[in-house]
Image 1 (cartoon, one colour):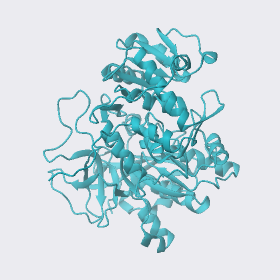
Image 2: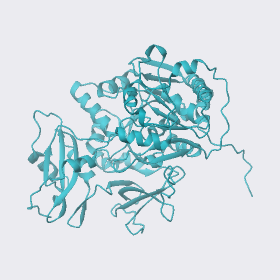
Image 3: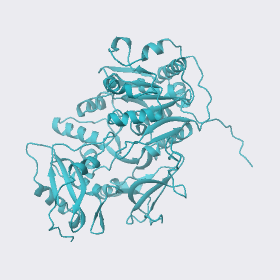
Image 4: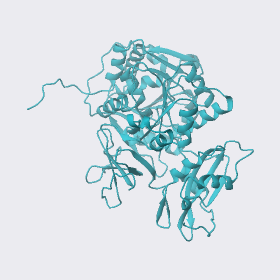
Length: 546
């Protein structure tokens, strides 16, 4: 027996139409590339998204054609997410922070037909345009008054294209399994890999983001998505804010501590999301200036493990609740979120922090387990650790243009993370499989060491890598950026600080104080670059494994 319910495809275009119909006067505010504030409504955004769709059709684009964006979080980029996918074309969000060689690779691999670009990145495209044979033209995300001189060929002005259209159209009815968007992994080793999402997976993922057990968005909140739209789908916030009818504030390229603080306070932001690097800048700015962020209620932090000290500072000093999240480009990206259960609020704060430093429980739709190297499932007891495996309706099945599946024989996707899962379902990343330090047959978590070091009041950032040791195979080397470069803490002082916080045999064999640590295009610490930088580092042979 079948149910007798209406059947209609799940399409991302329905999200912006819904927002325009149910929340027509809700606003989207942008601090533009030019530095001015722009504000309009969901109703206006929906109309302009359709004007963009009409303009793209007039340019000869249609179902299956890939259109790239190289842009900041702005209202025009927001429109691109709907205008491109809405006609059955594929939105390809290009990360402009990648190396030129990687940009050339992914643009050619995706066979982008047009690139929609913010003025910031025009020189970058000018430097590589001769290497992009599939690209037919460029659309500058600006108006005629700000159109620059350029050597790029077949250039269009975004606002001029839209002005030629009336926005009076119905979105085409598409198969929900059609591709909606394309995002490439950051590619720290080898070429970046493409992950291509469907309309169905994108809408299902949006429901998970909006759910109370997810990010819990609704129409009463003002949301500041700092995480870039070109980084792991902005963690689903472009689609989810339309689904929830939330007020949206977009920061453009203005991501320093001063600008983020100003936006939070002036725009009365309730909720925001970004990687730890952004919050390090903001907290450092607040500490230096004495400013506050009194209106802010909660932050989502993801992209890499969140230091205990960062959570404690946000919550105890500034009254902002931290929700740690974990995911990947391959997961659309949300996999888990750490929100406290009722009983946790009755615990003392340090015991609460013991839970908050974990990456949290899977959201509905994600199945998750840990396995050893032979594929055997391990106990969910918070002690056993193994390869983190996931499956679900918004998890990658195979990479773009690859003939091979990305799954094992039982349909599990190997995330590349090493993790524990406790009896309550809380997952905690202990390391990336390629970053774990194997010392004398035992594993040392570089993440735990880094987070412990971040609790030192004079440490701004810390990274740990394994370096060769003649006796123990590998031992940890810690690299530290001090908050005050002129008067950095000594290696001895940092080591003494760590003594009561990690096992004795985990203590780093050496600590190097540096001016900066390299980061990947997505804001994570670049362990590959650090291992290259310190590949000839020589450790003492006197280390005791006690």
